[in-house]
Image (cartoon, rainbow, N blue to C red; front, side):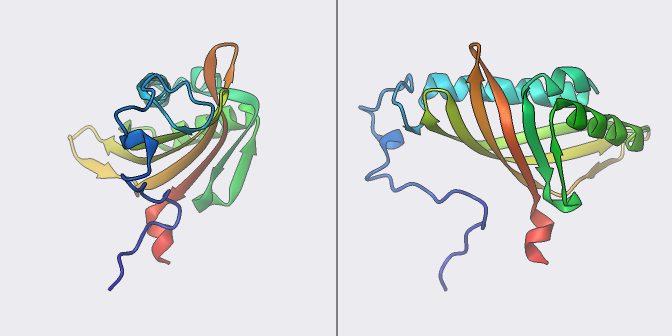
Length: 172
């Protein structure tokens, strides 16, 4: 039986031809396009760490400041596409109201970064959210794959487009 792949996940690179596995590759990631080098990867990882802390701290304004003014945010399970910082912030406030009574933590992992050009990258990562109630009981939201387009503006990375796909919906 042939192995199955996640329909939204990027395909695995061939180690024989992937520059990311070549020790001679520029680790600073200065190439115009292709896999990210260590410096770029670290910048993007730091952005996502800030976003997770902002979400977990209910700091919608700081979170949306990491998006472009005209950013789009689509959560496939809701069939809604939010456009612009204000719409994203309003949705975050509604979500925070629904989630009162538990501490929520966003967990991001398995980050993949691919440079499109000097000021644009595509990223993919896994996300899951835990909720801990006053008794210490923990529940989990369905795991997701997140796909972003990030752009560099005035020396910092901003999210231009985000699509969140819940894994359970892939099975329906």
